[in-house]
Length: 482
Ligand code: GLU
Image (cartoon, rainbow, N blue to C red; front, side, top):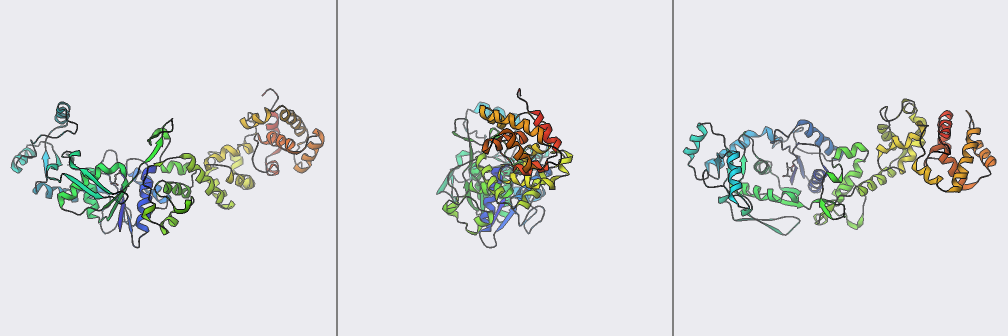
């Protein structure tokens, strides 16, 4: 079994691509000796870049997707970058030209645009001008230096192509849906549909698994297989990942739904295992309603019947739910090590950064209280940013008159009692005595006064670690007018 992931390196890996890669990987690794191949489809030279290729590789590796053959590690059927396979395409083009399955088309872009405009046809069909040109006449034009593209002669193809999609019944694609399409550009580069079909054949792909949006490409690729008399691989077209519009109706996933780059999610602090788990649910329904599983677990119980047959909906809240669950499962030490990557001299002040170990218990508290690791600096600001406005949480607490009354009494008492080297448990008792408050209202008022939040790490953790002058500055920052 051989499958491939074939990204065009024209940007970051997006979640749709990552899901395709994951499902290909799971599918092939569920079979003994299944191979996963990374092929870089960089024939669009203007839009492709090595930087994108590297970013895609990095994102795939982070999701646990490792390839057996690819541009970096090679393999018997390479090269695996299409820009390094131009001779191969050229040879195959020559074969099609010799067999008259393809022809040189000398229409200029302007001529084509004009013909399309005046034709009134829904699917524009090219006139016979160059399809019926003799080889000699075409060569004559080439010798005159006339630029040309090479098109597949679709009139020689079957009237329809039927294939058995692994997820659907038979799919019938009428050839009338396409006209003679360009397989080779005037700049000497093949087009996607031609190069993909040639490579899938030469790289001996047994299965092609990709999103449903590629169905019209599948028709073109089947035509290329036909022109060479090759047996096509088995196809599986996955339903789309959709978003929802403002009214909650299904809509195409777009920028409106937020960032879709895998690396951006990971940089924000979504754990790769949470991201992978969530993406897998967008293509596969794990049996018995199990929600949390790893790629390896999916592979070990893999069954084609669990591939999703209907559209999946992208739901960022669900992704973040997965992240909180995975964060909670981490050991304190692992969480702390990871947190340190987000608590850097760029995100927190130097004195706090230099004292991270001291604050370990406070930092670890947030393991169960954040959605994203990138939220950490903001939460921890209570330790290093003493002068703050009353937060919304604090304002909500103070909106109750009795709470407010207690709060200001507590604030006065704390300002009086907090001294360098004071012992927190003693301060607590003294505040209790001085204010006559007790229970929840006493503790909440102290918490809001000292942390400007109504929830957070153990108060003793905070007070024992935050320098006394910070605490006092914060206390003083709150006054009845604010
Ligand atoms: N390079 C194509 C893309 O990124 C590959 C599609 C396919 O899997 O054939 O969309």
